[in-house]
Amino acid sequence: MYLNRFLFLCFFLSSFCLAAQKSQFEIGLGSEFGWWVHELGSENPNAFSDLGVTKTHHTPAPFISSSWLWKLNRWKIGPSVQGGLFFETQMRTPSDSRDGWERIRIAKRDGFVPIFRYGIHIEYQLIKRGRYTLAPAFRYGAFQWNTLHPRQDNFGYKHFSEIIFYHIWHFKKRDLFLRMNYDTLRVFLKEKNNPFEKHYLYFWGTSFGIRF
Figure 1 (cartoon, helix red, strand yellow):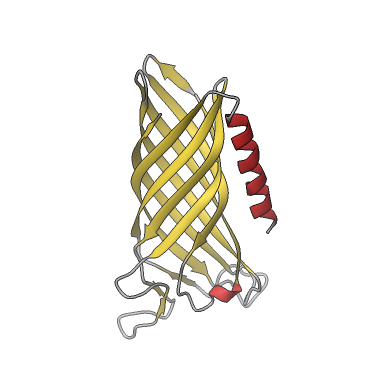
Figure 2 (tube, rainbow, N blue to C red):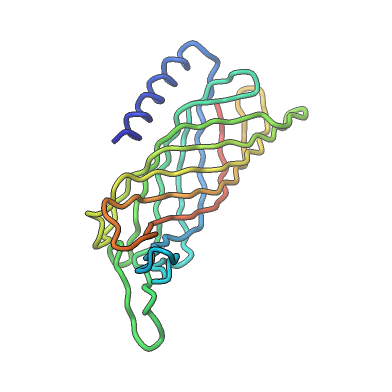
């Protein structure tokens, strides 16, 4: 709840500042690859995750994203949103093996888990040579999804952090970019079954896009 209020305030302040500053609108298309990992924790408070993990396969997740950024010297900042599809339907449990199947369904058969992220984008112009710019960036925010995980009622608030490297080529009226990213998405639990239990999603990917 507090995270959502914080992000709403950041969105409001960003929009107010953008009205008075030179700004750019960005849109990009790409694909990530990653997996959802549920660390089951430990029955012993002094141990760490000795109960094993439940996880998906290494799975593709195509996405579309957009940002509205304003410039302040070498910095750019503004709100960002992203929608993607995690093409996975099951998680494998620690007891899953060739001798017996034990899976947890997270989406409909032949389906996917839609994920929507919204947050703040902060970018720094590290190198500029002629029409080329190298700019690392960071995004932080919350995400929403639609999953069939049987324990989803125990999921609390969800947030993501993303590290990005932009290769940007400048033209007269627009910029083109190649972007590489690494993301961590975390689901906090209302009640843990065991110490150290946690849900994470990890992604890395590449995308192309344009800024106006």
